[in-house]
Image (cartoon, rainbow, N blue to C red; front, side, top):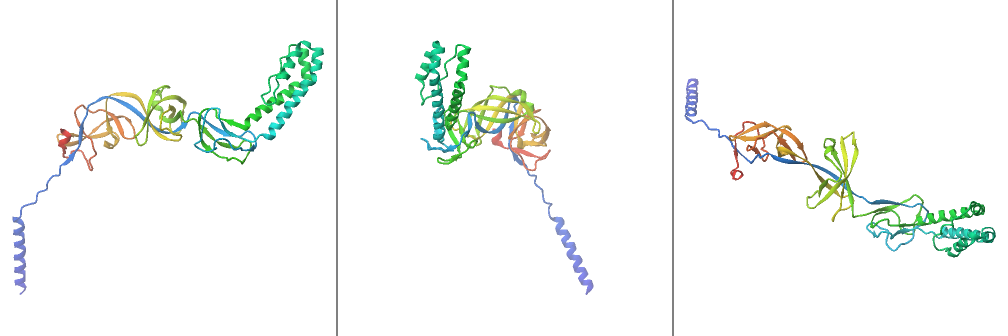
Length: 365
């Protein structure tokens, strides 16, 4: 029985081996990837330095109170977005008490001059008319005029001895201070920040808000120090929003003379104006520095190990060395490529030197 089982097993193994021998071997088809390429034509390629920054109004002031009092209700609401013309009152602090003190000092000055008029008529008859005209033109509701000029030392000493000069400068000091109860617009602009409301007590030194001119803006950008010699005041630059839907033209107005030690960059300030610009807006700045001769611009995604690039030669990928001259966020300007060679225009996953590829026909056309 055992012999029969062994014979049957041997037969089955032999038959299986014969059957497998007759089967043809399977062929492995080579996969040829379709690639997109572009022909290299070296030209004079401009180097465009790209930087970003926020807009800041060139004319801007922070409003602070130099006096104390209750904020009065003005013709316009003291709120962000309110616009004012040059010379228009932005806000006013109640000055009734201080105004009364000023009028008292003016009255004291007027009385002091009036009291010396008889002595001036007797001792300085030539000066009497000018002092009399001064009293006649004295108006308590207007700015105090300058005192008449003295023509002799005796007259000067006489006027000084009666404390006329002291009273006069006390009045002028109070007139300067009372003007600080009213804040007027130094230029046509718009209120961007409001920190107080009418009826509240304002203290000396308290910040009240911010006021800017929306007509001209500046943007500060940091440029690598190696390109510092390419910057110059008056150079035109292009600016655009991050969505690339709007663009403006500005110019370099200032260049910082110091290189930041931590970043090795130089700060340049660009002036720009136009519609659609707002305080704090984030913009991209493109500064055309110089043109690199006999160079070609490629996408950063195509660069391998910072110094190599794939080309297609006889339907095979080849990895060649290049010389990167300048790189920005999206592209690299390189040298060392021959005119007419085909480089990849789109990355190929799993690419390697010697890989068999086929150039997309539409790309050839």
